[in-house]
Length: 326
Image 1 (tube, rainbow, N blue to C red):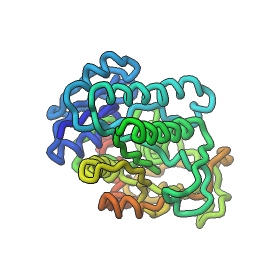
Image 2: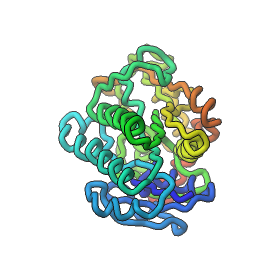
Image 3: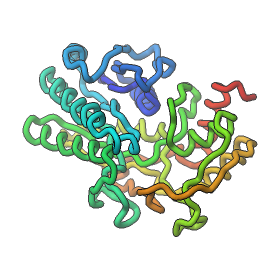
Image 4: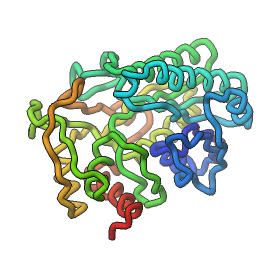
């Protein structure tokens, strides 16, 4: 099939592009390179430099007869979203409306949407399944939930089929070493740990050590980005096969604490990785773990590379290459 990957030069987007290429699909990447990198582009995929805020250009590209598109173009810093709601509403919600309208205008029949576990807010129970109450606690999560609601209405009123794929914590790099572009200004735990290991940062801040967990630090569900990418391919196949839309949570179903991740990183990298305990961050729940039973049932999806060792080793390889550490 012919696939358009919007935001395909980013960290997750490049892995999604790779997964579709590996599955034999024809891929075009549409990206403004504001956060993505040209390093993450592949010779087998066509590339169009463009912004979702340019509806005329977007429609012109979408008119190319695509069987589906993957939408990964969004602002994603939860903290910033609380101080710049207008910017996040415009980029995430208005930008998505432009994509959906362009899809309708050009006859593009299917959209795979990059959603987030942030739509759920603090857990009422664990593991978090698709029926968990949706009560986002930051504006970023609100935008993702509103987009899911838009998709439901566009399906109901216009027949535009979709998959909403809710990530928990994406981590790791392509196990084949084919993707090497680092995220700009990373905020997630593993990239920050790698920056400390590489000497880019002096030390790691661990936000709180008095949570009701096995070692006092927060526990999160980390999923290898390659496993996430394969789910996008399976989701498109599902829509084509069944003609139905879907929403699924993707997690490893295995919680890893901050201290466990740091200790494993020290073991794999051979670096000290200095860390200091600092006060808790407001809004950080003690534990977040997903249920992926629906993804298994509907998509046949299983995380195969989401063990802590693979997550860290695949990421450390890229950081070593980038910073000349041998």
